[in-house]
Structures are given as C-alpha cells and as structure tokens.
Length: 428
Ligand code: CMC
Image (tube, rainbow, N blue to C red; front, top):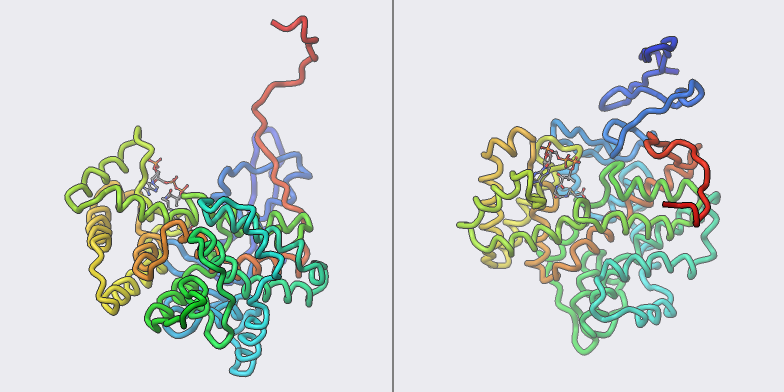
C-alpha cells in the first residue's frame, strides 16, 4: 500500500484523494484508476504523463541520459556482454550463469530455421516491396505455423514462442533482403554466433563459403544490444495493447513492427541516411538547420530529439564510438560521417536545439555503421525490429504473467451532441 497521497481538487466537487506510488527508481506515480468511479477521466494525448503499466525490465532517466536493463547500464552491457546474454537478462531478469548461457544459446540455435512452407510465402510479394512491408506480413503469418505454442496462459508456451521469435527474426530479416536481391535464401548456420549467422544469411551465397569479419560481427552485435529494449516506447506499448486483448504473440509482434516503421520511431535510422544524402555536403548544413528551426517547414532533423531523453541519448554515445571504431578498422572514409559530425556540432551549439534539449538519438549514428557493413538503407528499420523483438516479447510476457486488463483508453469528446436522423431527401 502507498503511504503518500495526492489530492485532486475539481471545482464543484469534493476533493479526491489518490494513492501515490514510489518506484525503486524514477518519479513518483499518482494512481488515477479510481477516478472513473468518480465520473472523471484524465486527458493526456501522446501519453506524456501516463504510466500505463508496472514493469521491472528497463529504466530510463531522461534528464541524466541513463538507460538500465534489469539494473545494468547500457554502456556496460554494450562493452562487456553480447546480444543473446542481454536477451536472457531481459527475458529472465538476471544475467545467466555459464551453464544457463550455453543452454539458452543452444536452444535459440535449435529454432533458427523457419518452416519450409514459409519460404513460399515470400513469392507473393513484389520484388521491390519495402522489406518492412514483407516483415510485417511474414511475422504475422508465423501464427499460422506454430500452433503448438499458442496458449498464452501456459508459461512454457510463452517461453517457446519467445525463443522462436528471437531465433527466427534474423532468418526472416535476411530473407526479406535476399528476396529483393533475387538471390537464394541462405539457411542459418548454427556453428556461428548470432550476429555472424545473420551476416552469413545476409551476404552469403550458396556457391562459396561465407567469410565473416569479426569486426563487422561485433559491430552488428552491438547494434542489436543497443536496440534490444527501451521501456514503454510506441512499439512496445503497441505490443502490450495488442497483447492485452489476448491476441497471439506473433500477431502482437507484427503490430509492434508496424508501429516501429514510422519515421518518428524506428524508421528514423533510414530517414537519417536519406537526410544526410539530401544535405550532400558540409557547406549545406546551416541551411538544413535553419529549415529544422522554421515553424512553417515540416522538416525535422532526423536522429535528433527524444520524448524521454532531455540529455544525450546514452545509446548514441556508444553508437558514436562504435561508428569511429568500425570505420577505422575497415579503413572506410565515409563523407557521411564527417557530415554527421558537422551537423551534430552545429546543432549542439545552436540556441534552438539547446533550449529544446534536442540531442542526437540512437538512430543518428547507427545508419552510418550499417552502411559501412554493407546493409542497404531500406533494411535499417528491419534490423531495429529484429533487435527489439526480445524487448517486445519480454514486455508481453511480463504483462501476461501478471494481472492485467485490456488496454482501453477513453477520450475528450468534442463532436456533435445527440441529434435526430434526417431522411436523405430532407437533407440540405
Ligand atoms: N528537429 C527540429 N525540431 C525538433 C526536432 C527535430 N528533430 N525534434 C523535436 N523538435 C522540436 C519540435 O518541433 C517541438 O518544438 P515546439 O515546442 O516549438 O513545438 C519541440 O522540439 C518538442 O518536440 P516534440 O515533437 O513535441 O517532442 P516529442 O516528444 O513529441 O517527439 C520525437 C519526439 C523523437 C518524435 C521528435 O523529436 C522527432 O520527430 N525527432 C526526429 C525523428 C527521430 O529521430 N526519431 C527517433 C527517436 S529515437 C529512436 C526510437 O526510440 O525510435
């Protein structure tokens, strides 16, 4: 029970006392669930002040630029861990022991292939379809293939589904790419680690052995870690909302992928690269900064700003370092990196961006690394979806394992009051 209380005074009504909860980290939370019984709702478009659930998975302190998964900082996880270990942590709440890790990695590997019939499914798409369009459809279709684990009230079914999703997403993502290339799909190789296997399925061909650079595999794994989870963002909230109706997990993840696709969310990494190409050279940066500040111009600096971070996004710091490392190790001179750094420097010193606390976010540098790895722009958001799947499924599982209600927001109605129906002939 909460000890603190808040009092709500509404003109013409008696004061209403509301419980206040104290989290282990972060701001106090006023419980407004009792308001509806008092004939009141809260109004919060965009959920800027609304906590929609209780969660133990991820904590963000936007003012300090801090991100913790199950209490561990993203900087430490990116430097000392790997994606499957972080996945285990997100799903089960603790870092695995050596034995637990081995079992987990082997179990994921046992699920990397997709049903052979699913390969046929791809033929229905145009070759020039956006890979995100294919991914939404194919992941939703998984529910038609894995009937043996769709009982959401069975904890073992939920676990198998989580493992299947983590294991199959790289296979599906690479298939989306290969389909557009007109190249044969590559089967997964379970002698490789998670990131290596993904690069093998992306860039390998059946007529020769795939050579995978350890530098690129490490950079890829770091990108997976940095995108693995991010609290109750738009796509995770979408997955929770879809799941709250009892929908099957594959359908819920497909809903999350759809929410991620937009340029304000996961689609920003693709939009950053397109923007850098449009800017073209450092001399044009000032012009684009001016456009971003112009209220009458819809242009925004892609890769800048965040709903929660009002300080540097900690993922962007790691991504920035990684970007330099990868380009140095590969000996790549990418003029886009120079352009990105110039843009960052000017924006960070500009009063508009300073005042609005607009800092580079995770997507600002990820596209440059992905391009250096050889991944086409249209695949960037697909890779974000692949990485975020573990976060989505961890949140879905957390919700289903606890008591929850169907998500059903209310509204501030400003439409017509009740009126009589006018027959067609009498309407003017
Ligand atoms: N360029 C120029 N102005 C901006 C930008 C930007 N990138 N971002 C926000 N602003 C301005 C905005 O116009 C508004 O100004 P005013 O107060 O005068 O109306 C103010 O800053 C507050 O912005 P907002 O749009 O009300 O803030 P929000 O919390 O609703 O939106 C955001 C956050 C991430 C959608 C937004 O900053 C944005 O569109 N950024 C560009 C897209 C992007 O990089 N998205 C990736 C987010 S990180 C990855 C992920 O989690 O998916």
